[in-house]
Length: 192
Image (cartoon, rainbow, N blue to C red; front, side, top):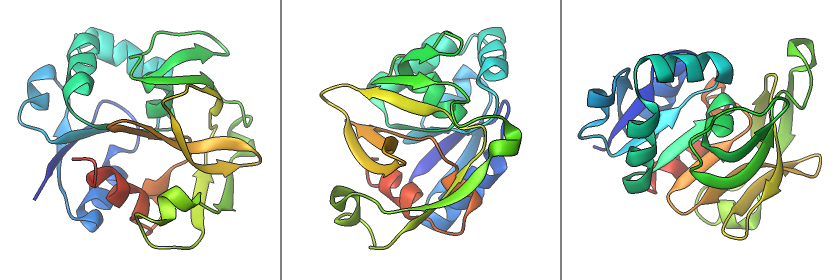
């Protein structure tokens, strides 16, 4: 069974742990750089990216996370997608530069503008998982404004990429951990 860390500094890391279990992995809470040792992959959950950055800097985890991402797969959701981007706007902030994407923070609006949508994955995603729509929960979600040439779009919402992969990494601007559908987590586990 694959051992997958869930960054447990802030955000709904417990929901990701449950989703990883449903998908067939052993979740492990990661709070320090030493916790990254012996993990097959890592999930950076949603939450508040500015707060996460403060906590990551306080724990001296920025460089260890970047190094981990150079060797192992990372899956970022919402705030995790922001942290993995190469460019962040509204406002600009530090990131891990793990994926060639530009992300605008809170682009779908404030908390009150959060929504549940049903999205149809691209055929590339469906060939590796089960067919059918995905329930996508957007909470103060970022928008991926640009994808680099090595980034593959797996699902869109209102014309914007919301699930993308680049090499071993995966990001979603929505929260798949808040549904009972394990397909996105299964997709990530297939990268391990």
